[in-house]
View 1 (spheres, rainbow, N blue to C red):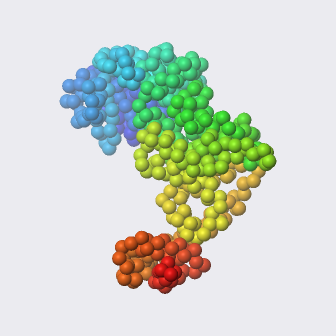
View 2: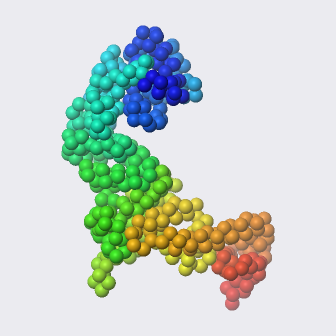
View 3: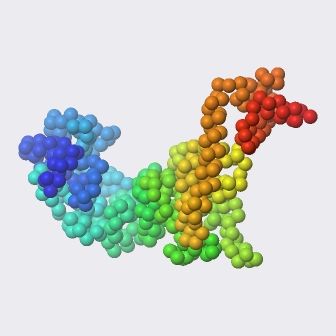
Length: 464
């Protein structure tokens, strides 16, 4: 294990700090996620150290800086060799009256006591300066068995911090672990308490789950549902379990599930290879509107969802607001939801609409949503048939973008100032109408035309 430590640049730098602490007579260990990841053969994102060194010693020994109130909780951050290391004093936590953080912390000299306050056994391992594992809670056994267990009673751990329930799901999916039966039961009985957690923290956990590929994210959604959390954190997804797809149009929902829209959506999510939370959420959200617009068409013997794209856009906006997503995040999800059906008819669109769509800043995530939606169909998806109209539309968009870019400094640019100068007009509604009509005709024409001539022709028609 020591050799593993020294081969990793970040661990090697942290080992120098750990050695200083130990050589000065203080009990000190690498702790938490970095030890877990090292044992699992995964890349650690950061390396943390726990010690019984007093705060004044830490400040004298290292060039420290604290983050907000972290120092009050016995934590300092030490920059060294290009990395930042969090060094925390051994501590015990007081009561958790708000289900979020301890009311107070107390410094302790015992690493055993420090371990008892941690959430999961796989996160409660220590690693000493010589590379020996320090395990007081059978964390290594849990790692080897692939089972997520809590330190002590799971009901106590989750009532200390309700967010740990979401973290349990995330760790299970990330490491392909299973939940210990008692842990699963504790989450199921306390799932409603997740509503007491700030939406910012909930959103952060959901986005971490969605930062893997679609297969992992779909697993996370299923885990959330199994322990009763889904209906609280993403009720729009849970609602999709109440309506069914038509089997001949979405056979995958019946092959891999119970024929519900929920099953189709998860199949679509699994098609996503992008390890990006917004790409995953865009696919997850695309059919939200089906839960509201569902109708049974007796004549066609089919489930119908007329206008589900527009309704879904509204639902996505409400979800984004509830989770306090940024304006850009909300705009992307609303755009992909609103337009995922129209892209299916992109080859039939006028060139002006094609160019507007494919040149939009969110075209690529929209294209990804449409691909995932279409490619999960077991019967009818043809990559060539799907890609051909997309490529044709993108070519139109590229031609338009290149032309506009070349003409950017020319008098042929369609803007209000040019129109008013050409026609001796004052600012008015007519100027806007001319601009709109000229733009549409220019883009829809088989060949690019002289914009000046179009302006004059449109003006004459609108003035008659």
